[in-house]
Length: 420
Length: 166
Image (cartoon, chains in turn orange, red):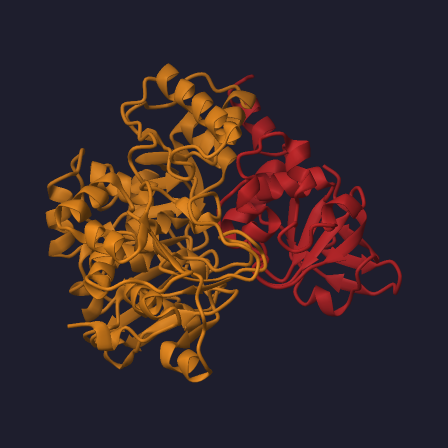
């Protein structure tokens, strides 16, 4: 069996599961973000009274942190009341950040677990050898009532990433290259296991970036076998004992793809589809792409490592007039670390706007929304029409290095000459 | 449950993500009718106002990809849609739709056989889609047992209420 199958088997009280089977599995942690007041409504509509376990579920207020309008404030108020009424042990209010970063930092994510959240990017937690998957409000309400959810045991695709990344090629570039080949629906209903020497040597932040974007290929979940970096991270934080699962030797994947990371260059997903991926050099060769906004943030590209790269490129310089660069640290811990290391100061001196940790303008809610006709380069995960504001705005997805170098020149720019 | 559905169609493209079905700027809304009035406004703001009651959305591949927002099927249902026929569906959208009683039916290549404004009859048990204007009959995939169990119960909410004796 694959490690993912072992996780599903363990949590559904079986010794074995097979591809295509429907199993009902216990959920180790359930998270509801602040777009999902409907979860509370569905919970009561279905006759829910108290959540099944007040130590295994939490709200994270990240999409509207802090609230931009009366309606979202009223939603938060109702959710706080639900959390208090149920005595939830964990509650992450508007001071915390993006759910996937916040949950990992709080130690509620660890290898071998199942985490379900009302957020498609829950695939992120494959970075820790956990099975993470997203669901809607009403599925979540059934979890809050029963502590379990039905799953179809997925086919598992291997994406083997071999070799060392050249200078200027970051985990975001690697996952964009993968996405360009697998396409936006290449892994629908399936799981992706990222393997290979590149993954084995990758740090926690890079692993999270890659697993995060598995859902952009349609994946139900992602997986990476934990390495020492992961074990160091979770052993310092995990709030429960955990058991790492290992894939049996000789496990047969439904499909396998191999990528030579050492041959990659910086990549871009061009407007307006995540699968419209091109090497940066190809886009630049077509002529200058003038930018209005750069954005570094989100559960994909807003960690300390991402902000550090941007600060390194922009320190002592300034972005051009009539452009703006929005920096949204993924969490309070990330923001504090970036403050302590001087990155935020360097970026603010370079003309950046630093906002509250959270999802911000990644989904067009607030804090950096785009006007019609504007062009944005962003370290986030989606460039769908209207994702960050106007449907007539255009978004390019890139690594934080490419975002920073591009804003420095006001046009899409290769970051490699700016790296030490 | 009603396994034969007839409705007028609107045709949309590939990779219609949940931001196009229900743009982020409306996510704080909770009134289902109001949510329905913004349905598919990321594709065309006029779609919801003109949508025929009980109509069917016809799409290409990967319908409902992106965000897990349940507002997407809530919006489609409250706009008046009874079913979505597409080459393929994103997983979370598929689950959300079934849970709420909106039929997500795979009908590969359907867009090559239909035009905006035509009337289709979907027969779930027979696994067919009939184009009323041309008489053409197209095959569609059956929904799985798990999905049918939920749909026959009237959605996940009645199913859970029955389970908990509410």
